Length: 347
Ligand code: ADP
Ligand code: MG
Image 1 (tube, rainbow, N blue to C red):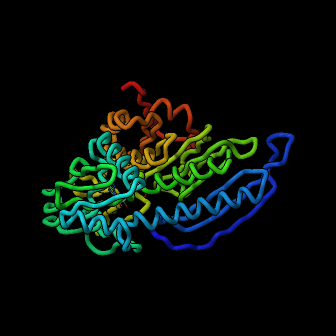
Image 2 (cartoon, helix red, strand yellow):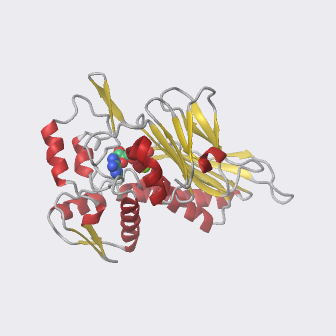
Image 3 (cartoon, protein in one colour):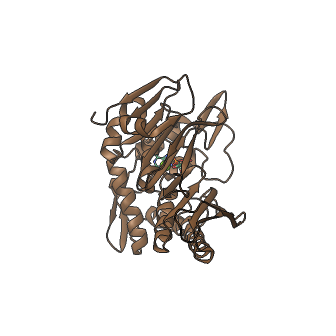
């Protein structure tokens, strides 16, 4: 997650009046955090209130980015040092809540979402602001990491402490932190009385309410071509998250190596090109998109069920589109010639 701030841009444009009272206007902010460009759009009649809410969100996102940064010196890297030394880490309640939610999601995913494999992610070169180059890691190094195979089951939490019974536990919350941060941001917006807003971190987002009289409409990126493969209209309070093999990767000897690592093989997961999840909780959607990407074309329905997510689209290597019935009811495909497999939500 890069804490570089590009700019904060506030634009007010006239929106559509939702009722006969004060007209709703859209206020937008763009900021660079969580390793991506984050767009915050707020529909509200009162400019001062909207801008104040946006400032609170901006502060919240920056704080979470600083706290959980996996490779710059951060409270997280300090926790990792303490765990490597076998120490008991003293934690505050926000940290407790964050790690506890990640631990539950990890267990529900059969540890495919495994935020303790920071060493493996680093071995693959993804603990850097820059794209890795050169060869993939040596097989012996991957084997050595695999013989360790820590998981969230090795982590014990109390309200004020964190311990691990495995020396290899190194946290990396790259598959979950963005979702968690977006949940906190939306909570802050709601507390500030905002009913219509969207927090969009590079295509991963949570939307509440609507955009005036229109629902928020989301594009899902095509995994292998420019443009979108599908669109979704959000309903009430919903998050849409996508994990893809095109987000962070390097190519070597004609093969692509990307940043979603299968903890079972130690290699980038290779049975999907992207997974999109709709869920009311952004952190759940984030972790599930990653876990289902790793689960691949045959295992994903079972893991989705365990994680409590029922709106899923997985695109396989041959671009076959697998989706749950509930996703099929919600998504609009923007391509004509797709091979589609609908999986019943009861399977
Ligand atoms: P993005 O952040 O691009 O939307 P993901 O949400 O799928 O993508 O998160 C990928 C990131 O999660 C990686 O960059 C890495 O930091 C971390 N990660 C990689 N493999 C796993 C895994 N099996 N479990 C948990 N986190 C992982
Ligand atoms: Mg994720």
